Amino acid sequence: MADKKRVFSGIQPTGGFTLGNYLGAVRNWGVLQDEYKCLYCVVDLHSLTVRNDPEVLKKQIREAYAMLLASGVDPQRSIVFVQSHVAQHAELSWLLSCYTQFGELSRMTQFKDKSQKHPENINAGLFTYPVLMAADILLYDADLVPIGADQKQHLELTRDIAIRFNGVYGDTFVIPEGYFPKVAARVMSLQQPSDKMSKSDPNENARIMMKDSSEAIVKKFKRAVTDSDSRIVFSDDKPGISNLISIYSAVTGKTTVEVEAEFDGKGYGAFKTAVGEAVADILAPIRTEYDRLLADTAYLDKCMADGAAQAAEIAAGTLLRVQKKLGIR
Ligand code: TYM
Image (cartoon, rainbow, N blue to C red; front, side, top):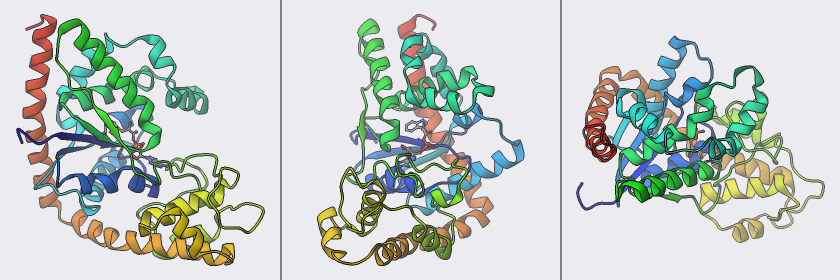
C-alpha cells in the first residue's frame, strides 16, 4: 500500500447505474486496480439530498455494491465500501465546509441545475454536496479520481479547498487529479443528445440501464434520436450520431475514424443496430455476475464489513492529522 499511488471514486446508489456511469467512470475503476491502490465507495450520504424510501434505499445500496463487483471492481485488490459506514466522511465534511466559500458553492452547475429542477426541495445538503465529495477524496490522500466529465467542476473545487487548507496549515492534503476516459466521458441522452444520459430522466428510452435486458438495449438504440441527414460522421452539428459513435467506439475500442469508415455508406438503421448489439454484448455478462453476487448475501456482507474496516483505518489517520492542524486535538 505504502508506495502505490492512490485512486478514489464514488457513485450514488439510487436508481441503478446507466451506461453513462459505466463508460464514464466504473469501467475505468477496474482497469486502474493493477497499477494503483484503489478505494471505491457507494456514496449513500450523497443520495440523501433527495427523498428516498428507506427500505428501497437499503436495497439499492446492496445492488450498487454488487454491480461494482460485477463490473470488475475486485474487493481483494481494492477497498470497496459504503460511505455511511465510515463516520469520518461526515466529520471531515464539516471541517472543510468552514474552508469553502458560499460563492464557490453557488457557482456549481449541478447545484444550479438541480435546484432549478426541484425548487420544492433546495436543502442545505444539496448546496454543500461538493464539500462532502471533497471530504471523500481528501480523506484517502487520493492522487487520481476516475470520473465522468460532469464531475469535473466538483473535483476542481476539491483541489481549491485542499490548496487553500494547505496554504494556511502547511502540507496536509494530497492535491488530486481527475482521470477521464478518452471517449464517452460524457454519454448523452438517446432522446435529447444535448443533455447528459441520466438515471433520473423521465423518458426511459433516453437512457440505457446496466440492468436492462439485451432486447431492451437494442430496442432503445433503434429508437435513438439521430440527425437530419444520413451520414455517419462525428461532428459538433450531429450530436445524436456523434454520441452513438462515441458509445460504439468506447465499447469496441475502435477509433472514431475507424467507426466512420466501417459504416461509410450504410444507413442509420444498420448503425444503430450495431451499436445496440455491441453494448448489449458487453453488459450481458456483467448482469449475470450481478445476479449471482446479489444472491450471495453472506459474501456481500463480508465484503462490505471488510471494506469499511480498511477504509476507516485510513480515514481515522487523516482526520486526526487535520484535527491536530486545526488545534482541536
Ligand atoms: P454519480 O453517482 O452521478 O455518477 C457516478 C460516475 O458516473 C459518471 N457519469 C457519467 N459519465 C459519463 N456520461 C454520463 N452520462 C454520466 N453520468 C454519470 C459521473 O461523472 C461519476 O464519475 N458526486 C458523484 C459521486 C461522488 C464522487 C465522490 C465521485 C461522491 N463522492 C468522490 C468521485 C469522488 C456523483 O454523484 O456521481
